[in-house]
Length: 146
Image 1 (cartoon, one colour):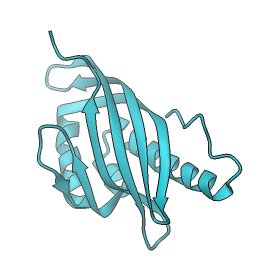
Image 2 (cartoon, rainbow, N blue to C red):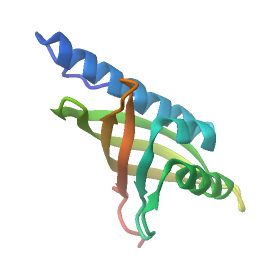
Image 3 (tube, rainbow, N blue to C red):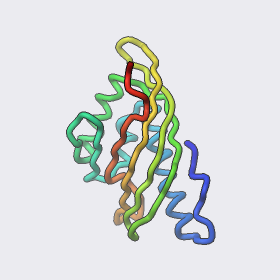
């Protein structure tokens, strides 16, 4: 994962929040590339929401784990997130904007295709003081097929 190049300077609280959120995003990227639905579930809040294009929202950590289990049976990821922005908007809420670049392999036909997206993560810090993904949505940045 490529971390944010502009770190929060001069404010140790902001730098700590940024670092903690980047750690969550790294854990997500690692779980995605390992095709590990349990690890994906672990970075989502219990009431998290996953909003994939052309699909209804998936609500709750267990439903998210099941959704990713299905995704991982269909495709395998080889992708890298780049953190573009981290903004804390309240003591226990923040958002992160990322982009990703890499490939996915369509497992049924073993075809490797380019994959590029931009993503929006909304994170919540729970009572355990840990940041978790509360909402996640993405859209492709690949050009439409010709």
